[in-house]
Length: 163
Image (cartoon, rainbow, N blue to C red):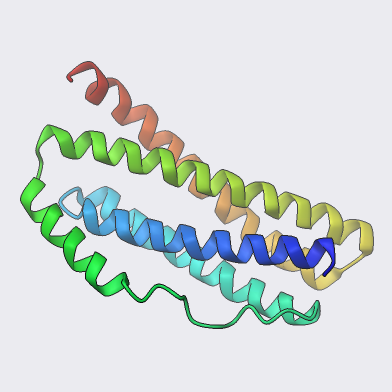
């Protein structure tokens, strides 16, 4: 397996994980309508990125297409929904949102670094298809990073000072 293949697999897994984490956080914080709807929108980007990476993987001898191996997703989603209803807008919910934003930011940062590695490699090897994929997807990952960072800057002072 080549370094490109390894990075494609890592990034594909990272985008799928980020999508699932965004969807879970959107469910947990559905009473915060702004967060909920933006998280759903940017989760779709990660879904699209993973699909593009699966296509690129085929060019490099990888099969990245299979279903997620998370059999417990349905049960966990139901549990998160009940927890979200029970917590509502209590102060603990704000701290949980801040914790989720931190984790989402770190996951997006990891993906961004992998996109950058692929971009540099695509340029060096003159792989136009891979470079086009990176050019389409990496800016959205950077927007995910800016969104989580902005939300942390807005929420942290009021949430951490009031605890």
